[in-house]
Length: 395
Ligand code: PLP
Ligand code: TYF
Image (tube, rainbow, N blue to C red):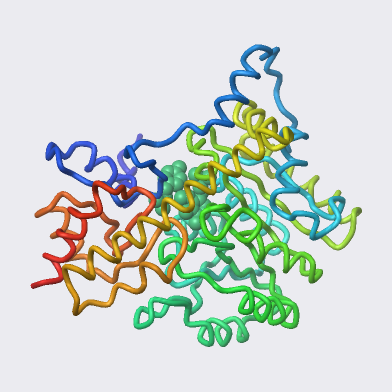
């Protein structure tokens, strides 16, 4: 019956993570998967999350099915966190989703149904799952010029030229902050210029914000979404709380659609609900209750923001630390990309062969593309990582 089912080669990043787990070398260092670790090399349980969770535990009550669109308090709080009042709430259709991935999937299915002729354009390079999710929904996915390896930065003129040439109504996937995998983001001036182009050309932007708070700050990282919304541009925004609440396994995210008016937003929300009903019917309760509690309580919210800010600055310290360590070891090298780029990742420019040597010779794990997760580095692992990289670059 299942003879025709071919073997799944596995997801490259998740397979790498499994191989790391099985690696017996005690000095191994995992800089592959995109998770934030603290100085002790552990995934943190955030203080505000623990406090909200114990308050909830005292009064768990029953666990009915949530509505298709999710927890109402969560949706209102997340709308505020995403848009910060840049657009009236009644123009935003928002649904709780299964992480950022679930938001992308619900959005992709919605686009396939209501914009069946639209092409979807993703940055070159992008998170691999963008291809899988949008192509899996039946949409053609193509890439636009984005990263300039020579400068370690965005090729902004190249990006503008590529988007200028797209047909009106095509969907442009944009990383709102902390670009995965390159760490190269637009600045505010560039976002403004891009918004003008998108508006003039009638493109449909789809923001993916999986790292809010890890770039410049919680509000700064939402700048692009808020600016586009304030400019009256219809848009999609997928958000994730995996990293900034350290709640990976709770699968908490949201999909917002900014509409022209409240009537349109009502209809769009209805069709998002229908999409969700067809996929998994309704989202889970637990993580959303925690997040709503934290965001709705002034003291818990302040505690969460402060702890997240500490995580953000720790990653920035790791960037500076690795930069200095590499400069000491290889004064001839150019490692400026580490401190220019933002968020959890940098593109090192290492080739797949060099990445393999790092892994084989030094048990330092990067993604094959050369992506290094700074958020998994610690003070203790900077020196051995720099040693290993310097060795590979030396030959
Ligand atoms: N989008 C990007 C760019 C990501 O890097 C990730 C996670 O790594 C996600 C979306 C989805 O995150 P999750 O489904 O864990 O919330
Ligand atoms: O490291 C990355 O880019 C991601 C991480 O359900 C990830 O692929 C892993 C599992 C998951 C979502 C994202």
